[in-house]
Image 1: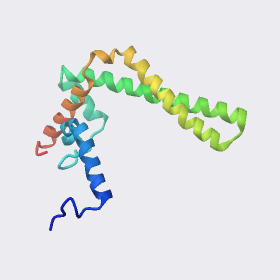
Image 2 (image 1 turned 180 degrees about the horizontal axis):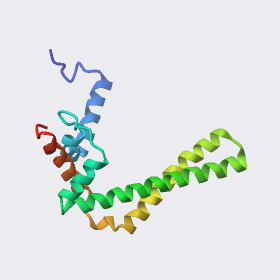
Image 3 (image 1 turned 180 degrees about the vertical axis):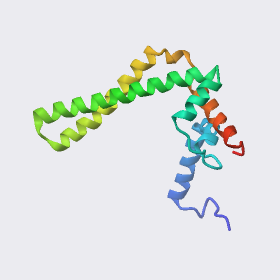
Image 4 (image 1 turned 90 degrees about the horizontal axis):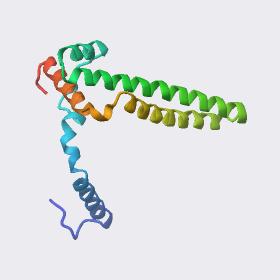
Length: 148
């Protein structure tokens, strides 16, 4: 038995309208449903599989390699930002909760600045990094049997 509009509660009706409103605005996310919600999970892969893809694809391989180098730069800068701000906060305040918050804030800010620097250093704005990651995903699916 389906509920009509009159028998639904005000909150349920409001919630459904709210979901419809935002579903229309974010309908482009349906393009990524095969990546976000695959039918079955991808097989396990590690850096050797990525290196195999980089060697096998002359177009998307170097782009993926450059994006991975930029990500490493971001991780290192996040670690440096987290440790330095936490150390500074501990030195001057001796507050455990302030130090923890400084650690988190330093990681976010350091990682953000690090990724921006890596973006310009490696000129990622000229490359299609998402396209190369999609090609790697498809290559990994085909390598595993292709029934995805």
